[in-house]
Length: 319
Image (spheres, rainbow, N blue to C red):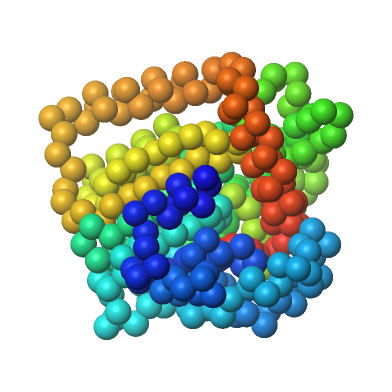
């Protein structure tokens, strides 16, 4: 179901790009997809890292594909040759967007690479169901600052927040970084070390090595707000066609490269609606129907290993 959602309306005949699929590609070449891979590491490096990772089974190593574009997804427009701009039908990404230091540049790059009406399909972590639980949601001001700075790595503030405010959930007697937005607040606690994060912040400098953290902390409503405001300012023209979830610890978004400007009679009315929706999201703690609980537990089991692996790396996904 998850894969079907992300690949909806995408066929093997279409030409696409997958961002940092690592050992679990959604549209693998071996299954006949005309999908190229973009990652900060080449295949040799990915294989070496996977072999050293105790959370990754050796059975999955054959799933690691050749990397066609080596570099940060933020620079997708520079990595893809100019003659191939406007030739791709889709871009798919699973739990990579949140790591990007400069999300607006990535979205602008996707617009250049995709055909008109091309698809950007992403799975994103819901802050209410992952270790971002206690972190403040990302605002447009943060995205704009990253764009102006042409940011290439997470800044000291983002690293501090990730380290100091990380959360743990209690799940049937076990502690985990992933659960779902549907939980009792008594089951979540702060796990980050304030002192260690502060000491790291004090000693930080622009020359520090890359530290991999979530640069964007979001929920469905906060993401929708970011896209709306970016479109209103003319920073992007991609339309948010659909947003669904949460399903477990994640939600799904689908943007279309329409090339058309945003037309709203009252932008503040739309922003107010989303801000109110965001407040409702924050306050909701309801028990989902039984079949949704089953889905949540399944996704928790399948994603949990990947999240544990990701948290321990210094630079994964598409930073």
